[in-house]
Image (cartoon, rainbow, N blue to C red; front, side):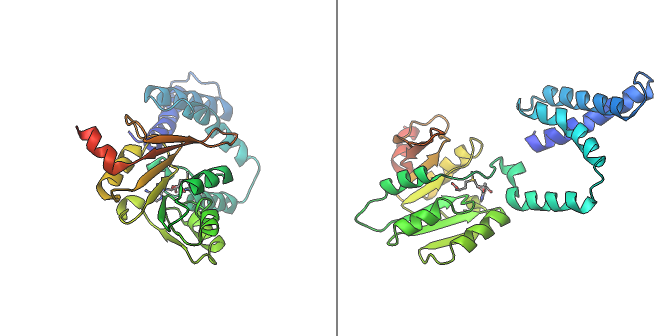
Length: 253
Ligand SMILES: C[S@@+](CC[C@H](N)C(=O)[O-])C[C@H]1O[C@@H](n2cnc3c(N)ncnc32)[C@H](O)[C@@H]1O
């Protein structure tokens, strides 16, 4: 079951538990007893559905915070506004399980160091976010072509705005799985563990024979990288590099 569906089931399950307890007369009166029963029910259902551990504190806080926020008397438009803003930023993360976080400048330097200094190349950032990797690279290497594809409207709009003057940068909105990866020397991915097996499959099918797939932080499951680059930053970023054309052949043997 996808995590978002598990979360919904846990919350609804919690309300069912609270309703059962209230009906059977086992619950003391008052709103907070009902909230406590719902919360514990939601946590129990989430645990039974084997939700990731970090969902449990979320379920523990969700209804109490919602009820407490109700007491602030905020205009409902604030909630709608916050919901729309978060939707524009995170868009399909509930389905793809890839949220927005950004490559740092140390990673940009490390990727720049991998680009051949003597010839122009083309790099595609799959899930390009706000363009935090592509914009500095496009400035550093005006001879190269940098492209990005991003699903979420808000990061994409910001990337376009900030990169409007860069002639060697092109950004598109869409699903990178539905777009061709042919013709690129480098594909850069900073995603999550969830899509990496599918990323590998598509890279093997579409990347050019000498192409390099770079994955920030998330290795392809069960596959030895061609090399790993340790970035000198505080979070200990690792760049996993794969040569799909060469490695796919080896993996098949
Ligand atoms: C962790 S961020 C990385 C942003 C940027 N590449 C960077 O390094 O700063 C991953 C981005 O991938 C986007 N994303 C996830 N799945 C996608 C898909 N199938 N198609 C397009 N974008 C996707 C998310 O919306 C998110 O903005």
